[in-house]
Length: 339
Image (cartoon, rainbow, N blue to C red; front, top):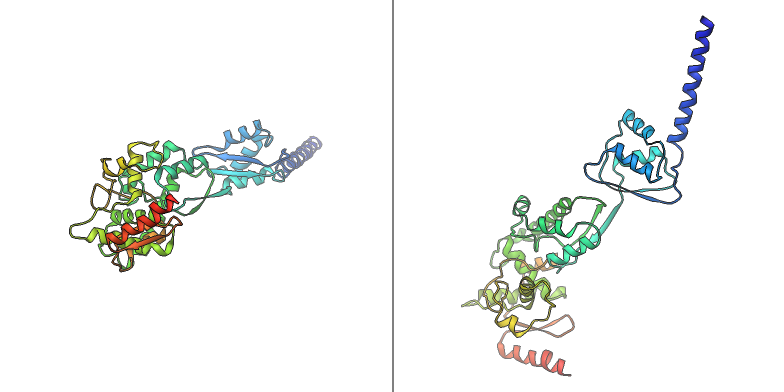
């Protein structure tokens, strides 16, 4: 009897060693793939169905073994995102990546001067946020209020910057970061004041967006801001008469607007963003303003100018009088394009 028990124990030990060797060979051998694979973990996904799906795709074998190992080792939790799986990775490597969140990151850049629809289309085209999801969050009053964004939309508050996220990040997380960076930048710039009219956040970003759209020359921005401040402070106030706001009004009236302003747009289009017809600031920002435009609104230069005319090279001629302005228009617009 004792001999039989001894043989049984030896057999059990041998089998244990055998299966342990099989398991070790499985867990620490390379995955059965010959090229890199992408594994995407969506919000709410759990490990067992993910492993089964990967087995069906041929990324790994024995998903039940790996799931059991994950449960025993406390690595069954997943982190959302996109993962790059290499042919040299083992099942244990894969499990550790998923559990620790070693996701693939990528970047996108929002350029100053983009409006909400341009930002939306860019993020949709680059696979970050679906267009309808962007619009829903951009127009969500409660979401904006939660982030201390003075709405009623996200226009002008999605701060232009280069962002790096894990692929698969939620739309809310992207908005969170953009809004936080807007608030941080605004706070830094306005520590010493909010310009000669002491604008609130919405007014400040509204003028900053206009300055952003009016010139691409950084050194001109404080003078552009001065011109608009002069028009706002005139007695009685002048209309701002700035083309970028009219373009924005035309887009609101017709999403297919081609960007070419006509006499109708300037003189007849009834819209609060038509600053040729409505005096004062428009209702809100027309685009995302960058840091330099914001700094120009907070710290404009002192000037006597009320006009500026494009020289068609990214720069402008500034004028304090209507006579000076008319001469500049004749030279840089009428005669220039006639030539």
